[in-house]
Amino acid sequence: MKRLALISILLTLALSINAQKYMTKNGYIGFYSHTPMEDIKADNNQVAGVIDASTGDLVFQALIKSFHFDRALMEEHFNENYMESDTYPKSSFKGKITNLSSVNLSKNGSYDVTVEGELTLHNVTNKISAKGTLEVASGGLNANAKFNIVPEDYKINIPGLVREKIGKNMEVTVTMKYTPVGNK
Amino acid sequence: MRRLAIAFFAFLIPAALFAQDDLMNLLNSDAAPDINYTTATFKSTRILNGHSIERMVPGQLDFRISHRFGTLNSGSYNLWGLDQSNIHFSLEYGIMKWLMVGVGRGSYEKTFDGFAKFSVLRQSKGDRVMPVSVSVMTSAALMSQKWTDPTRANYFSSRMSYVAQVLVARKFSQAFSFQLTPTYVHRNLVTTALDPNDIFAMGAGGRLKLSKRISLNAEYYYVANPKTYMSTQIYNPLSVGIDIETGGHVFQLMLTNSVAMIEKGFVGETTGSWRKGDIHFGFNISRVFTLKKHK
Image 1: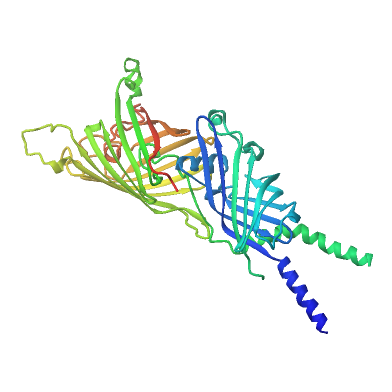
Image 2: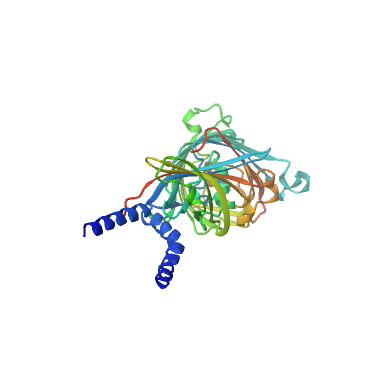
């Protein structure tokens, strides 16, 4: 009986560790493109994200209108002409860390990870893959990644008149600081 | 044992498939209040002649140059009005999210003008629904022309005129926005005793987007004061034009029956008639500079 209790306690403990989810409401996603004519840069510090450390599943969600530019006019054009953010207000990502086995969650440190998944932007979903790091820290998990996307892949049309000012590739930077979610 | 394993995997597979959706639900379950403010009701701070509810965001400077040429019916000798031009230029700046100010100078009666526009309500949907955007515009203008009769007692205050407007606009769809603009104009000095010092008018204006960068705009002010006994025949100003947006500039090209580019001039003192062909070609050019970074 004692042994049974011990096993069940261990089992619950293991399950609760397994079910550990980490979350953030103010993650960062930014993008940048450089051309000789103009640099385009926007930051969004209100990205929501959850990562399930037991499975490596992770999701992000960002409001398009929360991307802010230095120039208000650029921001207006981004929302009005390119992203059509009244029609498509959100962007989301659903994916998975493919090499979760190389991450030791019980040991603080930075681990190289590869994430694969589906990015939905401007109502178009594409498979993407990105390399980044997952840092196990005492307070939670920190994730960093950098990847490129091509606006045309998401049916974001850039007219010839401004084509020279907007880079062919957008470099996307993701920085998330997750904290554990209380078990529900 | 094998059967048990299969059953175990059968349970596991859907769990893995739905895991990401579950995470997404977790994100949405306690999301912060989601208020979606309407942006870009109009492309510019003017519909054509008059103000739109749009304002400059803090730290942005708008340099505007506007021209109204002579009338189309002045014939080929005057190149249908292009030989003659009225000019207005202004510098306009966003101070707060809800406040913009501007100063300008127009060749119409050599007038200096200044205005402040306050944003009172913003159209929004989501957790807070507001059907319209409302702004208040107040302005003062100083006419600096030489007195027609320098021999009589002329007061500085006689050069002043004031305008107050309430701008109520709704963006009905991506393509269509409409604005109503009750307007009050006070002129300290008028030409004759027949002319009213106070003018009341109702403005209406709208835009229809033809493409992402071009829109068709129209604007009309109905002057409520009886026009029969005024010393000069005045008409209600009607303007029709297009907005063309090219990166940092907005060009507004228009046909209008008024020459003045401030409310005091076009609301109560438009002497051109569309029916008689007193139509002016005109344009506004707006160039926005970022003085302070927008965060």
